[in-house]
Image 1 (cartoon, chains in turn orange, green):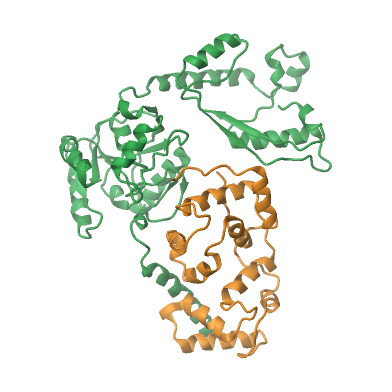
Image 2 (cartoon, chains in turn orange, blue):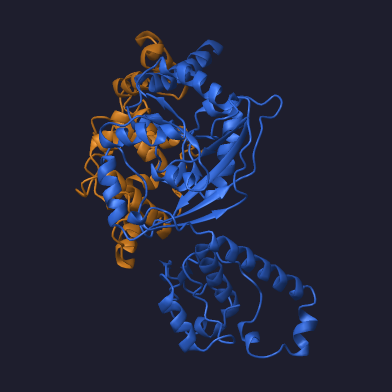
Amino acid sequence: MGNTSSMLTQYDIEEVQSHCQDLFEQQEILSLYQRFCQLDRNAKGFISSDEFLSVPEFAMNPLSLRLLKMVDGLNFKDFVAFLSAFSAKASLKQKVKLIFQVYDSDCNGKVSFKDIIEVLRDLSGSFMSDEQREQVLSQVLNEAGYTNDSFLTLEDFIKVFGSCKPEMDVEIPVD
Amino acid sequence: MFKKGAFELDCTVCPIAIKYNKIFVDAFWNSRKQSFTMHLLQLMTSWAVVCEVWYLEPQTIRLGETAIEFAERVRDMISHRAGLKKVPWDGYLKYSRPSSKHSERNSKISSDLSWKSLLAVAEIGRVLVEMICSFFVASWTGVVRYHGPRPSIRPKQVYVANHTSMIDFIVLEQMTAFAVIMQKHPGWVGLLQSTILESVGCIWFNRSEAKDREIVARKLRNHVQGTDNNPLLIFPEGTCVNNNYTVMFKKGAFELDCTVCPIAIKYNKIFVDAFWNSRKQSFTMHLLQLMTSWAVVCEVWYLEPQTIRPGETAIEFAERVRDMISHRAGLKKVPWDGYLKYSRPSSKHSERKQQSFAESILARLEDK
């Protein structure tokens, strides 16, 4: 393969654009489509876990398995919607929502002490002990006005971020 | 300048950009020079008309925008996409001499100078086109355009180029007999390598052997110091890349104490994607694909020889040359290791990230 995919029509692009709330330009969606087709080797319509892991930068990310669970099996339209949180035009709420979803591994809309510890374990690996992780988390929760038994919701996450947007912007190379 | 008529019709304007590839034919119909019949004849007897068409995002006139501003905005988009330079000239001036009001308005533009430079570029273009390599192997009908001074054989110099396919080597070899460093391939290709390529002088390496690196480094050094050897051509990326990007250069070629002469190669994908994905197809299949495709079209730029600057490390030198090659061939630079093509990143990569994260968290903890 390696060639550019079949052409998307103007309708297709507009449909994808409205599905991601206009957070991407049409040229960006075209570039994303080319990349999507390159990764999806046998044109199944979605990218398998193995194909995601063939992207070296992704495989090196300590959170790769968590992210995989969120993107596995998505078709192009939903994939673009997932990526839209990384657009420079995305709001604080949209970006924080993605972060919340990474932490909320059981997808029940609440993030517990245990959930955060698991993410911390992925992020720090063998370079922090379990006690150090629990100590850090307890301290952080305390400072933010929560306890170890608190269940954080998306609103709590947004409140914690306050007005500073997380640095989650990606520039999509336009041909 | 765009005439504003199209932009005052109260509808969505859908811009389309068209760019012809001049290697094959200059598609511009100069109606003042030749009739349409002659122009058509010229197109029909040329080898091919090659062009790219881009359908751009539909535009509507913005609030408070005049038709002229709208036209200019769309012209921006089209010019940018097709790589055309914008000039503030009126196209109709082709048909009639400018009235006096034009020379008053345009006293800034030295039109004499711009015509002279246009002619100079056309002259260079013609000379370059004459150099199209006719002895490229007939089986894959290559159309190659070379730019820049031909390599001069001198001691203590090494050539580096970006790498897309095994045919890079053939394209460059036709102009200058380079010696090359290659990975030995299995099958009939290996046979070809051992017999034909030995005559120009080749150095073999094996990616999978760890100790191999020191041995190869020594061989490289010996070759470059020797006066009778053909100039050495090295592909510092270490592997084939898809000709849209360049990956990190391996520093070996830059530690040899010689002048490094960069070469940039860019294939035109309209005809065939020259990228040999060795993980997907064998070289035989790749060659077959090239032979059955219509043509292999590429441009080669010989760039200015570089030497290592005082205080510059080999890695910085490599990056500087990679900058030059990427810029010339219009390739994006990425900070990846080409060898990751062959193996998944080892866990040490993600462990490094975990380590830096843990250290910053623990440092914050200690501060409290």
